[in-house]
Length: 344
Image (cartoon, rainbow, N blue to C red; front, side, top):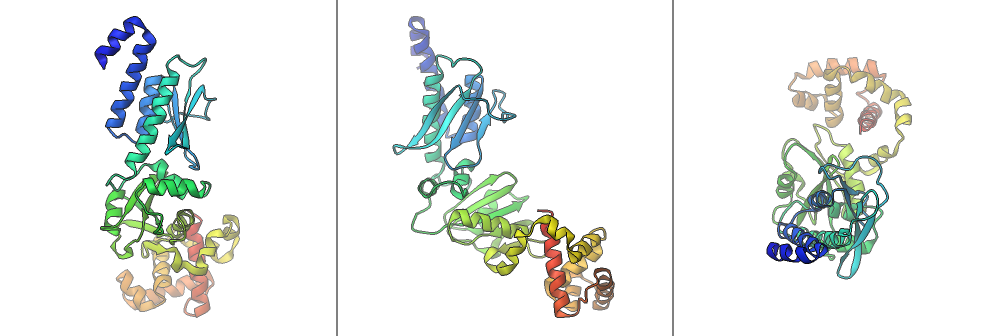
């Protein structure tokens, strides 16, 4: 190919350049690069910003020629091309070249779009846990249409006949390891969106999450809804309750809808906030609210129950809540939960 390109370039520089562009993208497709790597390579080749957008996905991939994310708002596209799969347009690639397009931009974008479609199709069904983030985002997006979601799920290797559950994860462990542990021997795909890990699976073993992982598990009511539920459930996780199922929250999930300003103005929430400066008091309150028992809280804190009883008396005075009464315990639990949600 290189020898042919050299010979043809002597006759027609455009043909030689076009052949080199084709060879460049053939190499990328053989290496099975993902979409960010493809955009990075395209920006370097074009020497201008290159972008990829999948229809329905909120995230746009824009890479500058230096290989970093392009800063600022997108400039007007100098040229674009559709990404098509099975004769259906699923996205767009473009270049943001200052001034008029280069003579080779049309060829470059045609191969760029072809490589993007091949990458989406190849990366999804591959027997790997990690998936292209743009494809996963398309599945969980609330804006994408059902046909686009169904196609994305198929590309990820999921059957349309089985519902998919979404898990939101924060972990210092590799995301593929976490996904493999909680979904052994079952279809599972994972990707990192912003600072939250996303796991897609047909079923999840909630008891297999390793230590150091916090996870919110959505229902199987559709990936878009399940993702919203998973993120809400993740907000309710604590050190004592690192895995939360949205189905188990019940009416507590409504606390996530309370405006932050309204929560801060509540007297009980403000009282809990004042305790935050004393980790020991806050830990005691959390243990008592989690167990509902002085003795079980003492076991959890590795303290004598009389020590916990004294701490709770002091906390009751500070909060102005009778913690030993059922109503007081409910108030403390709600206030503590609402205070935690303020930071998420």
